[in-house]
Image 1: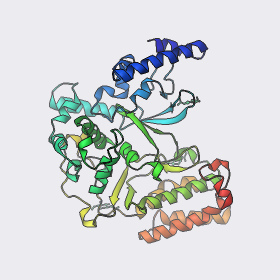
Image 2 (image 1 turned 90 degrees about the vertical axis):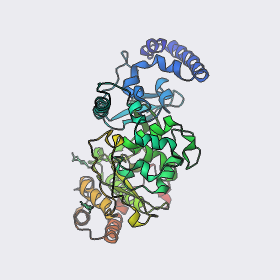
Image 3 (image 1 turned 135 degrees about the horizontal axis):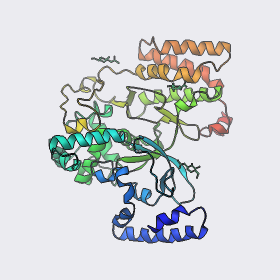
Image 4 (image 1 turned 45 degrees about the vertical axis):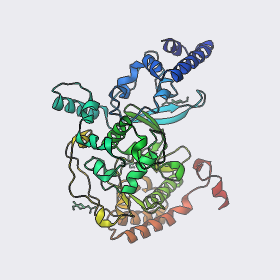
Length: 425
Ligand SMILES: *[C@@H]1O[C@H](CO)[C@@H](O)[C@H](O)[C@H]1NC(C)=O
Ligand SMILES: *[C@@H]1O[C@H](CO)[C@@H](O)[C@H](O)[C@H]1NC(C)=O
Ligand SMILES: *[C@@H]1O[C@H](CO)[C@@H](O)[C@H](O)[C@H]1NC(C)=O
């Protein structure tokens, strides 16, 4: 209570800020002594907005404390009447601070839209209990799939078969082991065995994987290890937080040197996603103006991995596809049943390039360069969006386009991700 009364006057009364800090410190001590129950109770207003009332049919709670302590804020979060942002967005802009002083922009996501979540929850309740409201978790717990998860020592392909995410369409044991080893919502035991996961953790992981693998991709392929994905900062209920970005769709009108730099990075990224040390081939089933984005330092990365699939190149081709995909309740948590997913057996490397050439390059590169350069660029875009015969040709085209763009990439502080190093090369 004090906190909120106080916060609405924050800007006017400096003493109030000090008071606030004292209160927060008290709360903090209380919280560490007796779990976070005390903290939670004073912030009940946002529980259903966050989806915290649905846990453990949720992503997790690792970032909840930060939400409750307002170290993660939505825009308007501190407004006098606690106006929450509209519940039906899938992405929100926010700010994050570790010390309450310096703030960094973040993005706060839902796994799927609130209306889709609500629809799925209602459908499950009415099917299994004939009621409008019920505990989704209780129903999910009774499923055959979850009973199998409970006793499983290791995450094996049969435990994820039929889940409606492209990422798990043809999973190798190596990939599934990586998920368990790298799952950051629990303390990292660096083990491929699920012994460090409680039933609650297993439910959360299974739920997340069933709705949208995006937060899992960010956790298991961290940017710090060179993967082109945003940083995962934690979750609360059915929301999760990652570093912020500008989608490419907002950069259509960028100057030629910026467009050249973006496309150059884009082609590099596409190449890296099919040729990397770990021998994982990432492919897209769909690409649009918000699939990729840039950080504030100008670096490009994959902003939305929900349409991303993965093929383990260490697996035999013939082992990749599974024929029978039995579906169950978990196959229908976010989408209509049965889910429509692409098969893995005929995915090619050139597919990523074709999608980029069709859906992104024309917007970034059209009409920005002098005569002959523009003609060459347009010719390449024409070829790569229609007539790529094989992966080798795709790679050659992509290399040629990079050669055309390279001299157009400027070296100045706007490109902080490679400045000032670019001055010396
Ligand atoms: C984040 O903080 C900055 C500076 O304090 C502010 O200008 C911006 O509007 C905030 N963004 C959001 C989404 O709250
Ligand atoms: C901007 O580019 C995106 C692709 O990145 C495209 O989908 C969108 O339609 C473009 N917008 C305009 C106004 O041209
Ligand atoms: C892959 O094969 C399926 C049918 O086997 C077909 O519908 C689909 O278009 C193919 N995809 C590609 C990219 O060739």
